[in-house]
Length: 67
Image (cartoon, rainbow, N blue to C red; front, top):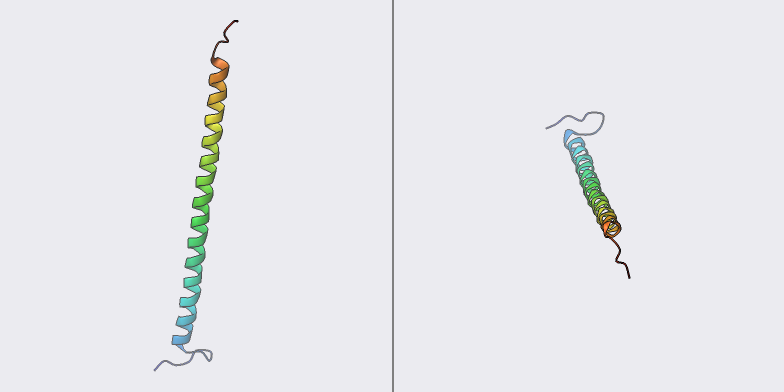
């Protein structure tokens, strides 16, 4: 049998640590998914800007036809 430490048994403190560890892992997973979604969003915005910029440059590079 475990001896109480500070009035709390080893099983209780192990359970508390398990709960804290589980919450920390879930929070890190949530943050990682948020960073991934934010990174993909930034990449798509940069890609859209690059495509628009290239289209603009291509339109300016074409010679205009004379009437």
